[in-house]
Length: 111
Image (spheres, rainbow, N blue to C red):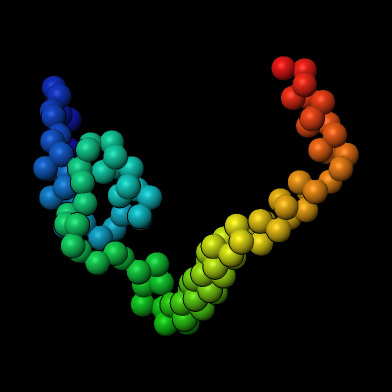
């Protein structure tokens, strides 16, 4: 095998074209090559690759995990929207505290 002498430049278009053809790279290797050479994804409309591949059992497990996470996210979002309403009575309760009122009045007089 003959050894190459000199340098060559690899463009982002060449890397992008090569990555579309190859199937032997792992996801991390492909990501590194794209970042290193500035080659974007082939298409913004292309579907994302599935982590399970052809493994149906793994796909089912990932779907269950995804559903659990979505349920937890919705519950958390619902709790966030209800939290300000629940915090209002607590704020009124602390404002009625006579010790706190006394301290606040004293600090206002200091100004």
